[in-house]
Length: 444
Ligand SMILES: C[S@@+](CC[C@H](N)C(=O)[O-])C[C@H]1O[C@@H](n2cnc3c(N)ncnc32)[C@H](O)[C@@H]1O
Image 1 (tube, rainbow, N blue to C red):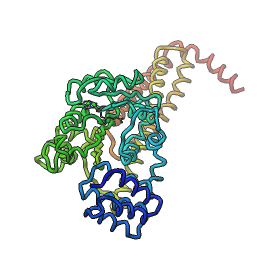
Image 2: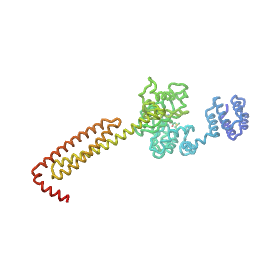
Image 3: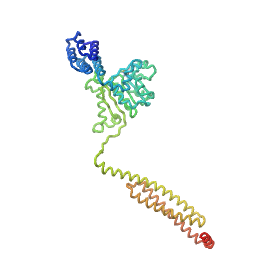
């Protein structure tokens, strides 16, 4: 069987665009007649760019069941020899990962996770978010997340192995416990949560992933999210997975797609936390992202038809205008009501006494005011009545106003009577000549 060193030499030759030399390495090896080596040499005879040669070598090694690390190395070469890596160059997480040659803590990642992280996590950067990473190892992830989210973010770690606590040397809070224990997870939430982001990079067994999701997703902040990494373990029996395995995490996660659509089938449960609060579930190769969001019941409506352009638009405009008119009328009514109250108060003062001249002068003024108020009132009433959808409150205001107006009119009539009485009184008659002189003097 081909060993790693031979494959490394082959890949090096391919990367220097020397496929002939790569083939000679294989043909000169002890395994030259192996079916796999024959196939690899055949690939190396093809006129293909280095990236494509490396990918096909990787596929052939994978088909032959070669060591995963050898296959991994072929695909790494294919990626870095190709044109896709510059797309990742702008990704701050990938930049950090590549620049972290030493000192930032060991980081073991699949580079295709970085665009996924950044797509879902970018909106939390620079904010005082609470982030929980389950599975700390030597703390490289915690350091990276702190750098990514910024100094205001609180980053908390959880691991079953106390080596993780020692490795982080007090730079981060790392709680010891088993992620398959719901009480441990709830304790993390109570002490450090609610979390905006939970990243499950722990033990990756089916039970650990499912218990963690079921316990922590409902405790996330509204608008929070849960990322479960390395979900390819759902295909690995050693982690409790297997193709089509009913207890696999990805089988469980696929059921959440039904929860997203619970409204659309009678037999689906609409009341579970997943049906109510799962805003979206995103499947990627080896990563699943769950968005928490308080959902409203979905509904549909029609827009963009002719009815919108014609009738609906008109009725909309009429509704807007009618509501604006109602508002104007309400304000004017309030002003007239105040004026009316003032008139009533003045009438009261007149009734309470005062000189005859004052009574007459004020009364004349009041009569004018009241006439104006009445005509304004009539105008308002006409406008109010023509305004569409006159509501009960307005009607009540109008009725109240009418009542007050009637009372004012009554008081005015009483005042009129009072004046007549004064005019008919003895003092009025006695002072008549005096008033005639005063009046002449005023005219002259
Ligand atoms: C892949 S490593 C984490 C790597 C780290 N996230 C990083 O980016 O550097 C997995 C970690 O999960 C921890 N782990 C395994 N089983 C666990 C469990 N049941 N509960 C909590 N942590 C667990 C291991 O001790 C290990 O440190």
